[in-house]
Image (tube, rainbow, N blue to C red):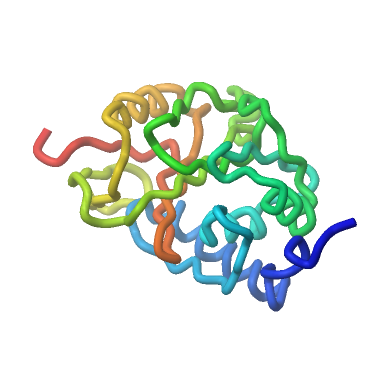
Length: 200
């Protein structure tokens, strides 16, 4: 039997809230490096961030397995995600359609499914919770959806993030797409985006 916490804290208006979330996420991926609001009024069980929950409830369904960072995992979070999304929670990250990740320090893009040349969309979308989307090292973004270039400054990306992202670019059309989330906002980094340290 599910307790009340597993049922509460989801979308107040599932149709309208999911549409709002979908527009924010799609706009973020179509316009890499730009900030989009992802405040959908969710109150998931701790320690799952509301932004990660918003992506899961917007995009996940019984056909989209979720890999959940152990730092987010407890019985209440598992029950809440299963109830509100219907998605299976799996331990094999190489089979995940979505991954909810707590820190960049242990993030290895190559561990997640990359899709294949015939079905490149069958890859993992990683949702990475960072402390803030500003205040970190300056990164320069170029590529589709960016007129010339744009800079972002997310906090606490790993030291090898740029190397990992360069390898991710090289796998195109395969590769992962990344959503950075914090403070009810999201930045989209599709696999086609080129990222360099500012001044490199």
